[in-house]
View (tube, helix red, strand yellow):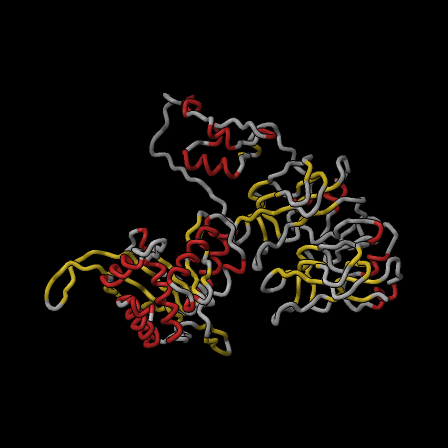
Length: 532
């Protein structure tokens, strides 16, 4: 007898889930314990296994679609079993009439669109929990290329990072809905994949908005249901042909690596002739480029004093930073506490600690550990503000600000108070490397209870920071400076470091912040106490 499988509640706070990927398709045999699908919750993407045996007869939520907990996800039963009664009796919003209808009608924004056998509509994926739109940074495949499952289709710039987007289907890339540099909402038409030679102009042209994403009779097709179309009119227009030149409409087509190499070498990409497919500039073109190729204009008179500027479109990450920091600055009443610590003992401690073979810690690692221990003693600094309550966190997750080319990321060292200095050093190094290489996972950037921003390595003596909400405080760390200091009535050469604690006055009173800094001072100026 057929069994209805509903969207599971995979976390205590989960209210809805998104099907990230199906591991089984309609008609497949299912054994108890098989992984049916990957479900994206509010906390993570998790594997969902089957507790039933039989044949997968129906899929109610397609890849990329989101639905409430307990919505019809799938039906498992005996092969060829009639499930029309179950579908007609379903109380979910999955448009069962469209699933069962065999009639083909003219496609409008509210009608079913007929998609040819084997054709897959690929939409802008949601690559982060806060992502609302994405920008195509670069295409790794061109129209006409063969695409295998697992191939990287494109690099998508989200509000947090630029991430590789791989194909879950095989076929030929028939249509590209967004060109490089273009931005569209999540679920907008990104590409169409299918058998070579298939005419998909009608699908692209009629790709229509729809909370009513249609799907065809499952046993007769392997298609993916349409999802909401982009609001930009151009996204629904036929694909633009890339000419043999490496420029089009003023844009220069080059691989991400070629762009990076050109920037590092100071090469003007407009002067480089591309040898890649369709005239695209690739790595070897930059490596083989000589400055003499740029000298054609030497000797020409160039007027001085001419006003000039370059326009750089705001990346999604930059937009997110602007939005979040502006919200923090204007919603949380900031105040600042400035201190200066004696670093003589810290310098000696680090030197002795690093004398142990295969051991190396930084001053930043020591500050992370000291803050974690101090926060355990001052939970109000380790808190979050809500309109009706404060949440005093008993766990300590330290966010460490890392500068990346597109802006700023804050990877999180979890349970920092429980880790040794060496463990903290290894974790910070690994997370910072992932951040710079755009490999950070969402779970590695979430959950911080306190943040540290260190510009001391750049020679900055002191500065203030904006609180990284929902944290209640952020510590700005300056450079260690050698300077005259007074000790026991004598002027001697000393080493000091300035720090500034920015606090949210809604949760952290001035005296509370000051007491936290006194505790922190004890750990920094007497670092051996961190080992006790």
